[in-house]
Image (cartoon, rainbow, N blue to C red; front, side, top):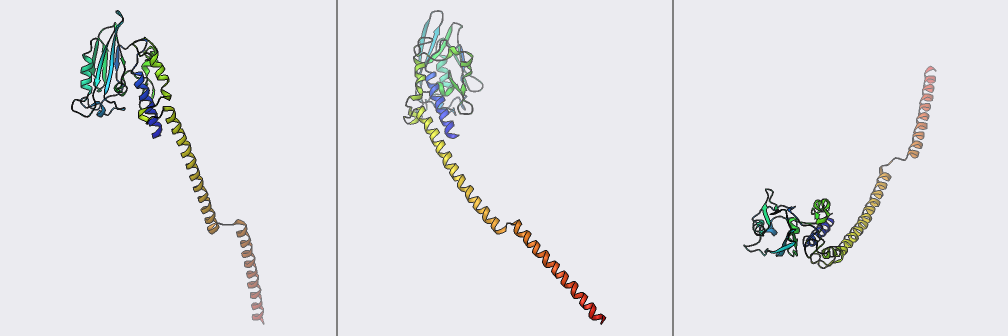
Length: 273
């Protein structure tokens, strides 16, 4: 179960990193992160997120549906253990400075983004830090383990949010091709193994362990049966043998009773003489 959870977590995080680096047919007008931080002033790789981001950058694209122009802003993520590491507070301030975008921290310590006007939509691109996936912003999967992972409800409600494009909102389908190829792509987080190879390894290990466990259990079962047979041989009762013994004892009792009766008669005769 731990291996299955680990595989599911890797699948969700790696796929979400690709999805958050692309854009859909339509952008977002509002979006709230799925995961909350433990401390909004702590470095984001030390904030008890389900997934760990790293230093890097990502882009925020603000699309104007009236002018059909897109403004792209680079957001830097620094997580190298120094005092100026990126926190949720600092990230929120940086995002709030982007024209057309409002950013704030909710009471649950989540990041909330909204566009400034109804004609503005926003999307993300080229996230090599994994921060968007770690926060749960614009992801394909929600959840973080085999027991709660599922397709994001926002995508189920609006399939146009599927981030198939990599060149802007509704521009192309290059990112969809990348996501489709993820199964057989080598992953640094898996020491160069692909998701397919990791899954095959999980299945093979499970089958092997099941066979070993079955053999061990069968060995214990045989051992138990042997001990049980020895116990019965020592303390068990053979009904046929005990029935014969009861008949023998019954006949011996009858013979003794007849002997005593005869002896009593003889004594009475001697006394009468």
